[in-house]
Length: 375
Image (tube, rainbow, N blue to C red; front, top):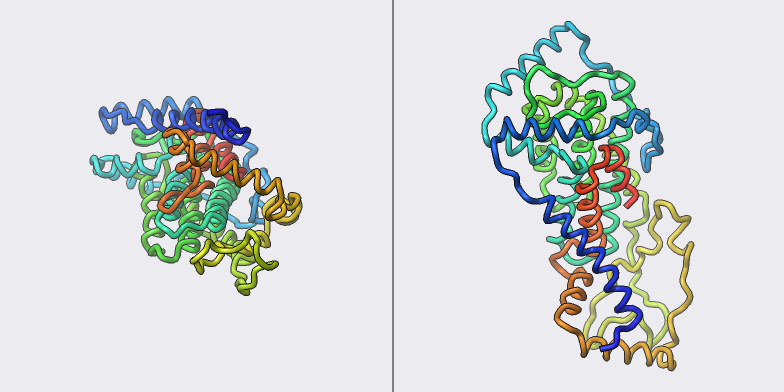
């Protein structure tokens, strides 16, 4: 069968996607082995290969006014009673390590992938469980990634303001990064994204998301990678960033109610199938506040072919011809890209692809969050 221009283009995109999915499969493979000895050496080696980002705290943010909008107080002083107590906590946590705590550390560590990856994957899961709504899901992914990015930039400013070295009093289940440890980026991103997810998915218990953020903070102490004050400062900073992102979201126009009026008369395009009374999905999404464009109409395309015109009929015949001659491989691809009910929808597919790319390339932690924020 002769491929149309659209089919050839889709095939080329699918090849690129297949490569990305191969990366996902490779990244998901387990390495087994000792949960403490081999894992510690592996994570230390990976951390040594990552570069520090001393200027990331000066990057432009998406929502917060600047990386200094929320002040982080200084960490405990060397020789203080608080630091002595935090040192003992690390030593006690080391003595109490077990397979369960090691699994929790690995779950949230983000070694070799964006720190926000578990939270993005949570968003993918939540979207998949909902009724299909591509515009709303795209908005959700953007807000989660913007929160993670701004939390990261804010944390990096204060990291280099205080320049506190990560603890080295016990061996690490997850290696500290090459940047200063205060505040913890894991806790900061957890604080921000857990708040935003609770806002976006009110059907999910907010308490469980808050507990997950607390578990992230605990896991960094159990891993020996952060002091308790690192993660407490991170959670507090992240939650402030998350609240700021939520305030931004509440003002983006997505809460407008459709008046039920459809433009034009019949026969037109914007009408439910015969026998259906279904309403359009987010008909006002084109009016929502944009992130970079001046508005949704900045790059408005020309009108579609006039209903019943020769061009319209030619395109309709092409659709019927292609659909009636699909190969099994084409059917599989069409179903995948359709982003039907029970999937993370098109924007979620691309989030999965970029996560696989970052797992393969292993950029610095700030660069990884920058990519997710731009995506």
